[in-house]
Image 1 (cartoon, rainbow, N blue to C red):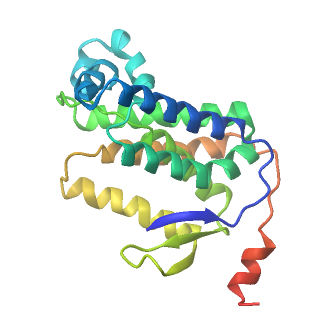
Image 2: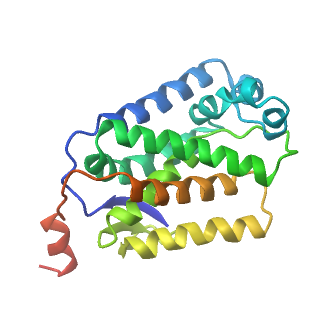
Length: 225
């Protein structure tokens, strides 16, 4: 299920969301400028490698942060920044710049650590912003349980659905657990789970400071007026 937008329109400033999208885009552009052949080197140089981390936690801790800005493909970075664009503005609007950045980076750290504890002997680099973005999704679920998400359900590209957020994000996190227990490799499923639940926890600690409202257009769209 691919999200197109949510029904929250009052955001306030979204400097952090836009800044993170730009940084991820520039980082991938730099990767691509070095050539696709350089990707494996960049993964091992800047990615989070659980085995290396547990051998030297202090020396490798920085890779938790650098790995958030390295991606494996154009589709990888596009998917992450798109989810951040759909769900990030409303969360940042409630938290403000500083709290949002704390949430985002903390979720990224939790994602890497859970992936590491789940697969401590892994020598495969973990890269991408998905763990941090998952934290934004978890916090969104707590903050906006009555919002809805305009969604395309693949492969039905021409059918649009307004799904309640608990259904959309509940399905999303369920899929992460299913893929973990199916042992489908190639994606850091535990990182998604770690980031999501850290987002759930942190948003209960942080005090949102702004209100939100639903977009009347989508209310009208729902009622076919």
